[in-house]
Length: 347
Ligand SMILES: Nc1ncnc2c1ncn2[C@@H]1O[C@H](COP(=O)(O)OP(=O)(O)O)[C@@H](O)[C@H]1O
Ligand SMILES: [Mg+2]
Image 1 (tube, rainbow, N blue to C red):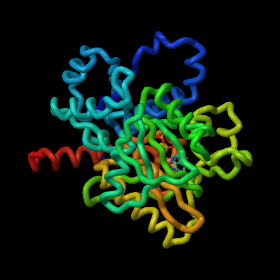
Image 2: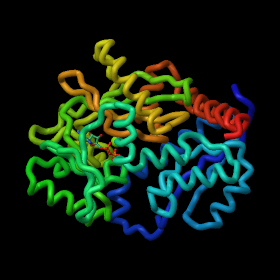
Image 3: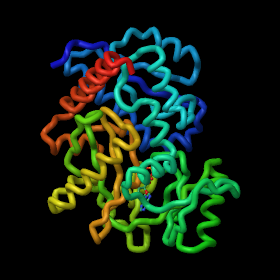
Image 4: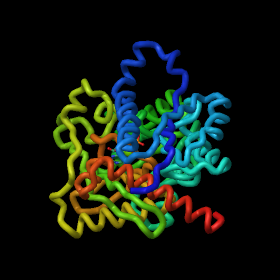
């Protein structure tokens, strides 16, 4: 067990008191999970005999000033945005770097590279990691375009949590494509990422560690095979968060222990390469697709993935022999060791 540490469990809120009841209900699946996430971490830290406390960034400068003075030895960083802006995750990490406050998980570079899915895909491409061909479009401007082939999936370039991803995101014609690009631009004021749709199994790799010391945990599959005939097999918003929907009830994550050794190795190697390509550290999750022919495509890299005990990361950790508390302990230790190493190397 490491020394007793003051750990601030950091999360963000923004304008929650202004949200109408109807929207609160729609968001409830997600909120409940977020809450569980930080509460479970708090409990685990207590069991580990650390001294946890909650700290909230509410989008006001005072909360940033307060964080600088919170006296924590380590921040367990669960923020996903700042002042309601998802793209500011990197600024929160950069701020903690500036004030010399150690924290768990990704640094600003990783947030920058992974948040923008097109940027991440460019990094994967450079490192020869297979990722679906893609194009991006924003109000008539094309930043990049492969000669992509239908079927395609259209997503907001800068969101996560399957925002903007539902059955209509998968398109089979130019008409559908144009309509969906317009929808993404108007609804999210976001560039559209247009990607070749890869049919196959959805496999997640949870990874612990940094630099050369990393471990890929047992692979987990989100089984989408029971979704009704005719609906695309994707982890839509419903599948992930809307507990009352059929899609949520018909899908479940499980350890992918039926994969042959060579395929599992290929998935693990690909995930690790992707993890390094976008500079993830401490812990992260790589989302992949495995085609019936055994090809592996990286769909997305997730810095600081959810740590709820019911989610894929903790599921993988459990399969590897770690209890939930041990998982949290290891993330704390990884962050502390890494910080020590970074400070001593002057980086
Ligand atoms: N190119 C693709 N081919 C097949 N399915 C995809 C593709 N891109 C996304 N999906 C499906 O949509 C889900 C969400 O997409 P992802 O890019 O991971 O967004 P988010 O950041 O919102 O999780 C994926 O988990 C997968 O099921
Ligand atoms: Mg994803």
